[in-house]
Amino acid sequence: MHKFQKSILYDNIGNVVNAPSKPKAFAQYGSIYEYPNYGHNTIQTYVNQDTELGASALTRDLLMRWARTTTSQVPWLYSGINTLAMFAVGSEYKPIWNSDLERFWWDNEVVPYLKQYLQNCCVRGQTFDFNTVMYVMLKRIKIDGDVGVLFGKENAKIQLIPAHRIGSETNFQISRNESPTVKGPMPETIESDGVIFNKDGLPVGYSVINSNNMVNSILANQQRQLFSANQMKLVFDPDYFDRGRGFSATAPGIIQTLSLQEIERYIFEGIKVQQMNTVIEHTPSGEGPEDEAQLFADIRNFDNTAVGILGAGVGEPQSSGIKIVDGPTHKYCLSNGGDVKNLATDAMTTATQDIITKKEKDILQAMGIPHEIILSPSKISGRMSDGICKVFNSTVAQSQKILDKIGKLIITQAIVKGMKDGDISPNWEVDIYNNIEFSHPKILTLNDSYDRQDDLDYYNAGLRSMNDITMKSSGKTAEHTMREIANEVKMKYLIADNTAKEINEAVGEDIVTTESIKEQMEESEKPTVPAPVNEESKPEPNEETDNESK
Image (cartoon, rainbow, N blue to C red; front, side, top):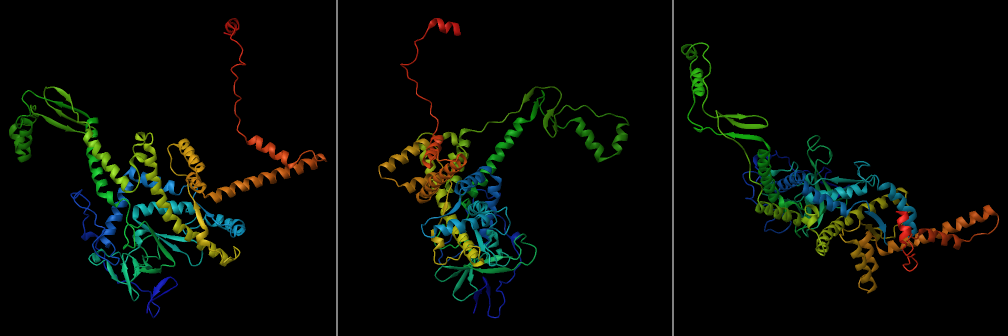
């Protein structure tokens, strides 16, 4: 009987369950997405089958490889994903406590503990603080399709498992392409695409390739290790009900991206040719037949005695044909006489530019990123900007929903670990997971003044809550915002009271009060507004005085 023990699958005698080793077969398969197949093939990521029929190793390998390649080589594609991650995470992505219960416990014990933990929450060191982890995690989800999060047993630090390390076969056996779904290591389980499911479709474990060496996938052993779903979570944006893994957000546009690269390569070649110093020299007789110089060279190369027959010291005859001269930056035709002309290429047509723009829009829109935000911001104007912002903000909100779910698990397990270690006072009755929320960066808006007035009108009319407005403007709940305001008011009274006491003690008598100090503080915080000019009080213009001043 197989069982989960210490987050690893063992058999009944205590040995780790491993899949049989098979030789790699990468060289046996050509890429269906490379030349000469540009635009002729579609990426097959789904078949008409039930019960978690995951993608084959070949399909996932090609998808992931080309998603990473196109993203790294196409600047605007990477910029779109990077912009999405910045608006989803940024520097404002922080855990907050959204409950009146145990507020003192959270503020005085959990917050100081998390302040230290979030700076070094990953096994890869302080470079990957919590915000950086969530920022990179979202980018990998969009590019690779998913990422694994492995929770530590000895400490609260997490370990991120790249998508290419999650697979059913020991060495990612592409030779098993015809059978992506196999019997699981436990009774009544199915293993597909690196995920172990029960018959209800619930993930109960994950297969990680060479987990003993997360630095290099070649060195050390090449065996897989099975982790239970309690210790490892797979984070992805699902597209199907019966798929336990995600696919790259760039997958629908990989073929189009490769085609765009090919088109742009031809355009750049034309630009390079046009920028060369190129001249063409025409002769009256044209290119003509083989000239004497070439004939003499052919005779000499055929028989060295020809030199003696023709006579020693005989020079090369003059050429009357055309000679092509190539250099690193020059290419020209040389002959005796003729006209010299510049070489020019046709500029890119409007139809070609329209096709390129349409393909760019298709690729970005498939990821929920409007083309106008990344490549054509000058075309945004008027109320059209609202629709563009809503599309992008909806994509950001969906991404934050995915990150919030795994983020709450990371924070919860860190707090539980802190309570077990004695760093936090035990509080086992409180529902930590459901009381944690995250503050988010401000949403994208291209008309701040209009949006603020619009929010105020809706709020005064009772059509929009304060929580909706605060979440939109600062990513914080109304309760959290009001608590911050209340703390500021409380802090003003404390500062005013302490200041009044210090002044009275220094003078030796009560000359100021707390209220007077507070009024002075509030007066100093008011913005300075220029006094209005009274038109009637203006002096009458005096022509003589004006002339003297001039």
